[in-house]
Length: 478
Length: 133
Image (cartoon, rainbow over all chains, first blue to last red; front, top):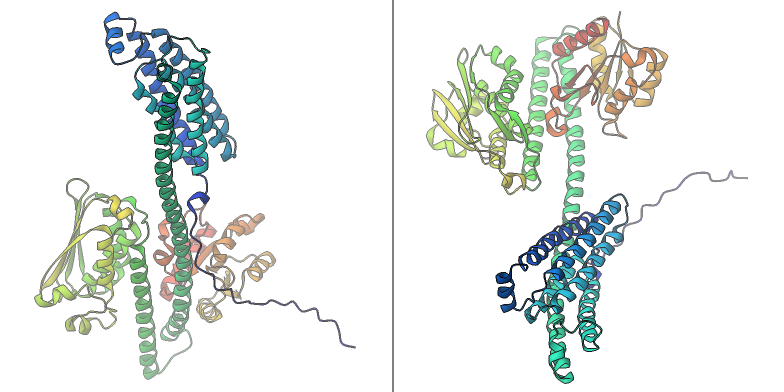
C-alpha cells in the first residue's frame, strides 16, 4: 500500500494579459483626499472672516449719513443693523464650523469633512439670500455663482449639482416669501415689481445661466481631477519602479562583485605566501589573475554607477547641506595610500565651503577626478586641490596635477564613455574609460560647469564652477 | 588565542579569510547562514564576529543580525562585530562608513570584501583590542 502523498505543491500560473487600463469616467472619480478637504474647509472659514469684516465695516460706515447716501445710489439700502446682524450670524456660524473642523481632525472619517463643507455652503446661501434681497442692486444675485463654482471645485459633479439646486431653491424661497408677504415689504425683490409671467421668465433666465456655469465649471473641474488622478497613479508606478530598480541594482552589484571578491582574496592569500612559497612563474600568473579581477570589479562598479546616475535624472534627488571642504578631504583620505605609493605631494587649500547637493554623487565625482590626478601624475610630483565659496551660494573647486596631460584636440572627447587617450591607456591599463562619463553625469545633475585646462606632457587642471542647488535639480529636470 | 567566528554565505570567501586568520594564530570557525551563526554564538561566544551583509533570503540579514545581537542578554550583546560587504558602501548601499552609529548599525567596523588582507588583519586586531579595553 502506497503511503499518502504529503508533499506541498505550488503552481505558477501565467497572468492573464490585462486589457488596456479602463479610462476612469468623469463622474466616477474618487473624492478629494482628506488633507485637501481639510485644507478647503479651513480656507472657506478664513474667507468667511473677510466677509464678516466686510459686513461689519459696511454696517458701521452706514451710520455716517454721507456714506449711507452713497451706498443708496449703488443700490445698497441704508440698513446698518442688518449688516451688523449678518456679520454676527456669520461669526457665530464660522466659530461653529471651525470647532467642527478641529473635532473632525481627530477622526479618520473623510465624509464628515465633505459634510462640513456642504453645510458651510448651505449656510452661506441662507445669509446670501437675505443680503441679496435686502439690496436694490440686482447684480448681487450673481454672488450665488461664487458658491456654485466653489462647490464644483470641492465636490463631485452630482454633489455640485445638488448645491446649484440648493442655490436655486433658497433664492426662489425668498422670492416666494416676499410675494406672499411672509417677509417685510421694505425688503427688495425684483419679482414683486414684475408680473407673474415676467417674474417666471426672469427667474428662468437666472436659473439657465447658473445651470450653464455649473455644467462648464463642474466639467472642467472633473477634467482637472482626472488628470491629477492619472498623475498620482503614474507617480505611484514610478515610485514602485524606482524601488524595484534599486533592489535589482543592489542584488546585481552583489552577484557580480561577490565572486571577484572571493577570487581577489584567494589570489592575495597565494601572493602573500599564506599557502606556502610559490615559484616565480606561478606568482606572475596569479598577479595577472588578481589584476584582471580588480579591473573587472572596477569596471562593473563604474558601469552600474553610470546606469544609476542616468536613471537618477528621472527621479527626485535627495540634496543635503554639507561642507565641500570636508567632502574633498574625505575623498583625499581614501586615495592617500595611492598618492604615497607615487611619492606625491598633496597641496591643499581648502576653505570652509557650505554647499547643497547630492553628497554621495559629488563624492563619486570628485573622487574620480582626484584618483585620475594621482594616477596620471609622474612620480614625486604634486597634486593641488583648492576649494572656496564665491558669491550667492556658489563655489569653485580646482584639482591640478603635473602629470601626462591631454592633447588639446582630444580634450572634448575625454568625457565620452569608454574613451581613453593612447597616452592614458599606456599609462594606466586598469582604466575603464567610464570615470569621466560619471563625472559628466553628476555635473549635469548639479548644473556644474567643468573647465579643463591641459598641456600635453605637463599636466591638467579641472575647474568646477558649482552653482547653488535649485528646485529644477530637485524635480529631476536634468 | 582569540576565537573568531565568520558568518558568510560565500564559503569561498569565508574559507580564504579563515586561512588568513588561522595563519595569524587565531582560532576560526565558519557558519554559512544567520540561524547557524546565532546558535554558534550562544554555544560559544566568540571574541570577534566577522559578519556578511547580504544573505540569500534577505538582502539586509547581516544588519538585522547585528541589531539582534545587541538585544541578547549577557556578554553576547558586547560582542564586537566587523561587517563585510561585497557591495560598495557608497554605491549602491548609499552610506559612508562615518554614517554608521550605535543606533542605526551597531558594529565596530564596516569594510568592503575587496579590502587588502593586511588592512583586514589590522582591522581585526583593532576590533579585538577595542573589545579588551
